Length: 299
Image 1 (cartoon, rainbow, N blue to C red):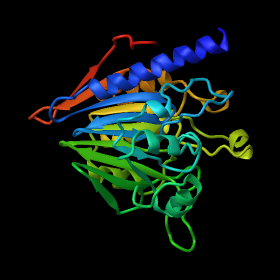
Image 2: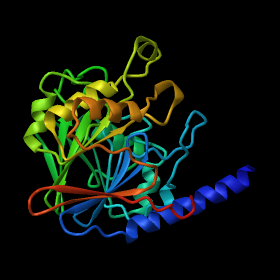
Image 3: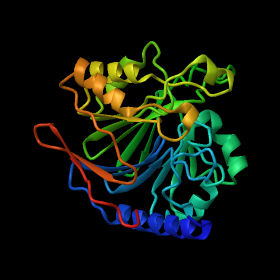
Image 4: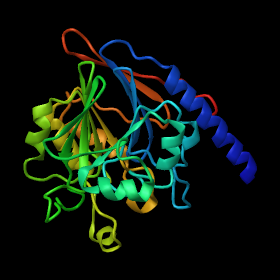
């Protein structure tokens, strides 16, 4: 496909998807989630639109092209990054997002806040930091931090702050846990349990000596992610961080198959790029999942 034609298709798809995100209004006690590849999600909850770990930049090594162009994101209320890797905090894209959504706030690990303010040229009033045992209230949405162990459970020696985080997002009676990039570590399960998540989004790309030697830090294996979900029993669990790079991928079907055998009552879902999933909690606290399988405009 000629480059100009591919660019026009990406432009059309991005604009159509952003319009769909803006137009979809989840009912009460519900959230809509769109997966944009890797660990990137858009979450529409309590009337707010949250972009979380979205990877916007085009790279030759990408297997999944960018689904959304930053200039089309004119509706964001909150933009979150769990740690400072390009596929989670995209330095080239964030200033463009700040311009396209001038009222949006940015949430990052507190340890990184001052440096990111300098490097990205964003106002300190818009770029907020959070760490363990801390929460940020943005309108009706609360964002809390859980330390992550991206191969290592690192802490800054001077401040004790963490460079890798997961986020718990709460609003309208729903709780969503996005793990960021993490391995299991002692205490993680109990920390998550305190929040009683309805939805868990977990990385499954795993880790090994070859990747670590090349500087690619690891995550949970699909078996470890399944065990974490099986122990915590959220209403829904979905895998992430497996589709973007050939050298750092995984098969999500192995995750759901293992979960089905070992924890047959645990509900799981494999997201499709750019397709919304609506989760709604009933009065009996049962979470209903509606997977929208309509073909997206421009796809």
